[in-house]
Image (cartoon, rainbow, N blue to C red; front, side):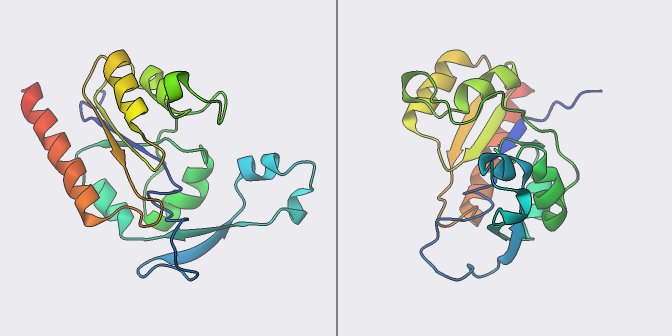
Length: 183
C-alpha cells in the first residue's frame, strides 16, 4: 500500500552539510567525511578519478534519527542523487531512500526559479511535500503555488548552519497540520 505521508525532499549540501559555515573547522556536533561522488568525478573530467580531490562533508549523525522521527516519506532531492544513499545515508543511519533523478543539473528554471523547482513539481505529481534546501527563494514559492496541485512547504535552511531544532519543529508542525487537514 503506498504511503499517505507527505514527502520530505532533502537536499544534502546546506541542510545536512553546512558547507558555508564561517568556521574554518568543523561545526560542533558534526563529523568530517571525505567523499568522491560519481557526479563530482564526472564534473572534474577529463581529470582521472584518482586525481580528483574528495569533497569535505560535515555531517551530524543525530540528523538521521531526527529525520526518521518526522511523519514524512524521506526522499533525496540533491545533486548527490544515488550517491546520497552510498555516502550520506550510512553516516546518518538512514535506510536507502528514493531519489529524484535530475535529467539536467543547474539549468535555470522559469521566472528565476531554482533549477530543481519544476522537476520537483513534476516528480511530486500533486502529492503533499516539504522541500528542504538552501537555494529556495520566493520565486520558487510562487512557482510551486501556481503549478503544484497539492500542499507544499518550501523550507529554506541556512548553508552556514544546517538543519537546526527550529527547522525540525517547523517540518513536524506542517506535517501534523496537513494530516489534520486530510482527515
